[in-house]
Amino acid sequence: MKDIIIDIKKELRANMNGIASSHMRQTEDYRVNWGIELPRLDGIAIEIEKSLDMDSSSTRTLAQTLWNENTRECKILACKLMPKEEFSEELCDIWAESIRTEEIATMFCLYLVQKLPYACNKALEWIASDKKILQSCGYLTLCHLMRKYELSPETAEEFLDQAEASLENRYAIKALQIYASLSEDNAQKVKKVADYL
Image 1 (cartoon, rainbow, N blue to C red):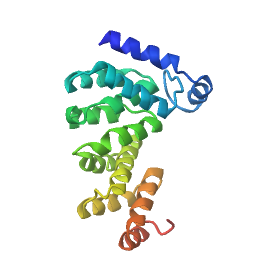
Image 2 (cartoon, rainbow, N blue to C red):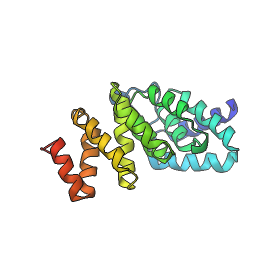
Image 3 (spheres, one colour):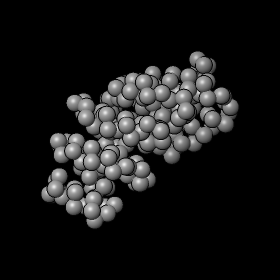
Image 4 (cartoon, rainbow, N blue to C red):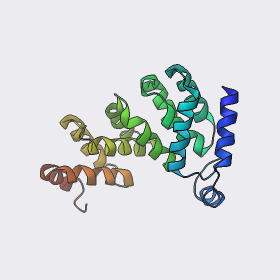
């Protein structure tokens, strides 16, 4: 596994964008970042999957090792590579608790959490948290689920109750906007929660 990680890091260094990396160092909390654009990271993830041809357990180990690196690109690749069937709720919580930047929270929810069978439960659990990054993960996940029309009426009610207390969180606002756009009935419910939306 160590050799695979070394090869991945060489590939990442070879694709470094110095200007983007410098800007990210000033605005985000990354120990290391190479400023690689997301489309290029998509390509690198596909190359890794093709070249390694590992079983899901080995791929999980690789993704976990990448996640443990305090490097922007490694964390994003971990989200792309982690097999959904190997990502337990306990591990999901551990990863979520370790997120330090909004960008990684966004990638985590986009590439991984929204695709999990327990995504809805996790989202509701996180939006009830007193930790801002977990709340953001919860609302981001709900945004994705709403766009796919995967929100039950019970979940929607709990979301609306929690969102009313989280109007300072921009992802809660975004989730309310998406929910309101889905139907006139939803829009009326959101209006009761946040009249200015």
